[in-house]
Length: 366
Image 1 (cartoon, rainbow, N blue to C red):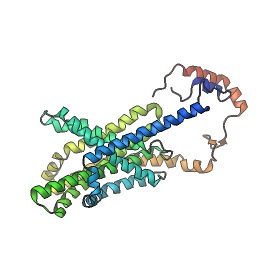
Image 2: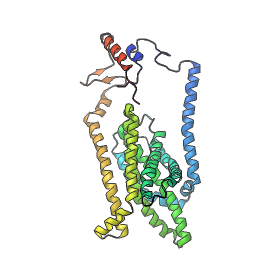
Image 3: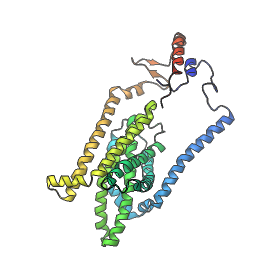
């Protein structure tokens, strides 16, 4: 059992001023100054994270890749499948998200991808030298967890604390946007590097080299949307289930990291098996394998989203929002209420006091 209210506050039920005893609000000038200082530090920390990520992104060529019109154009083309998938996740939403928040999450997904690049390269030596297990461990223990965590960081930095993040399903929407941003910048960096190698070593034209890498990166992009939408959904559950916030966030990251690692670990062997069974060419077997892999996990994701949508409409959330004026609540039998009357509070004093005493026996659980 847990509560977000102190037992003294709960027992008093607003009948006494408990400021500085069991409650607090910035009333004095000094307290207001402290509250302002905290807000500035909190915002500064977030800005510092973004600036640090942007600096790393610039150092690994991400900014230069986007600034190059040719690379940027190919990156945009490579992101089309991911955009389509993210748009479908957005379409399943039961509420309307502001464009600026969607775009901001996309940009943060691209910027925070820099942390993944640094962490992946820095941690890779710890699993090196293990023979055939090296790539598997690298994908499951490093790439998957690191990349899904930094994509979730983008959601946590901006939309998570917004009032627009008002349903569990919003977590999947913003997670998908962060995944799309991550896929875009990753594609841009890969395309820029591949073009440089192709032109220098093989003498290929920009068109020939760009077409091949763009097609390959376009196929990989939707996966990022699926993985981070899973993680985002559980982040949404965590926001509205604060007593289990930690386990829910961890569950979302682990699910996303597992699917991500499974894709990376099987993308070499899977198409080969498909080719042997179907007789398809290398590109054909690759496309079929990715389509099946993303299709299976995408279907599981969309079933989860549809279950939420069905529950949302079944309980009549929109009807309640339209019919209940601000400041009122609606009871289970549909009657409107402005809160308990004085008589009701008097009759329940003993119950409240007993409940308050019992709360001393339990931790918060967060």
